[in-house]
Length: 358
Image (tube, rainbow, N blue to C red; front, side, top):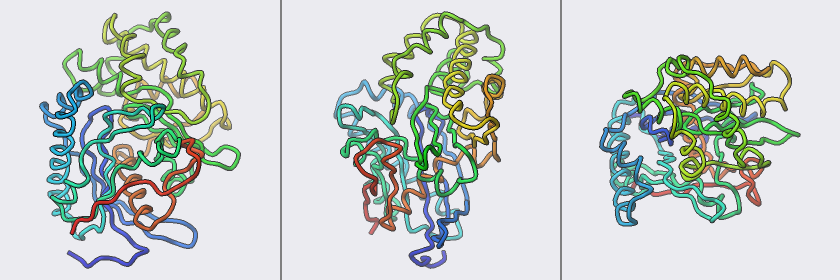
């Protein structure tokens, strides 16, 4: 292993586990502070799949007892720690920092709380490396939505695009508006599409073949588009609780193919409604698992005026892990890593709590 780098040149491993339960994404990055901003280099990346037992446990954990939730928090942190230890062992340099988003269990900023499990204390104990975690809680305490946090990375690392769109469990976007970085959640994506794919016995809709084979359900599409969340303005965020209460019930009747086709149309409508604020032909960096859904991307392209740029596979899969590594680096340097213009909090600030690895 090489010795630690200087304070302005930091190697960080970012960890992201999304609401769609696609797996545990790890990205090792080198960040360099420069007079003009920041530069990053992706050194290595890996996805560790959840076992069927873990996937089932996490999918239903929001219904569990408090004791089971705390037990799972510790066990998941230990699991993350062992995956990280294996991943770090394959690197040619030892990172100074781990930045873990964890796995979102509850997200109710209106009630003053958000919960990401996967104990940072256990990660630090297993790996022996300083670990930044719990990135969202301080923002909620400051009156914000606790989300989205990725816009800070978009602003500093991906400034060559008019907007950055993430098609994960939930779609979210960041864009420049009136000189400020604005961001918000848009609608469910893989949270719904993967659930429908599971009904056919597969974990996801490869290339959108299931959706492409279905028929549009106009009445259902209207119901989806009329949900009250889409009438809200300003900083706003979605969580599994909202999905379970408002969106999942709309998917109870119908074939998986027809429902998938209609969900894709709904996603395209909601995303292109947002894109109307951008110039025609605006370049939109599009990442997350949904970027592989060819039918969905086709509907987005055909119903709007923006150019959805699909980057190389590594960036599609690991952008959020890269950004959370960056947010960890900013925390380490004591620099702002949450924009109030994105989350609606009373001020921009440094988010995240650190557990020392020594």
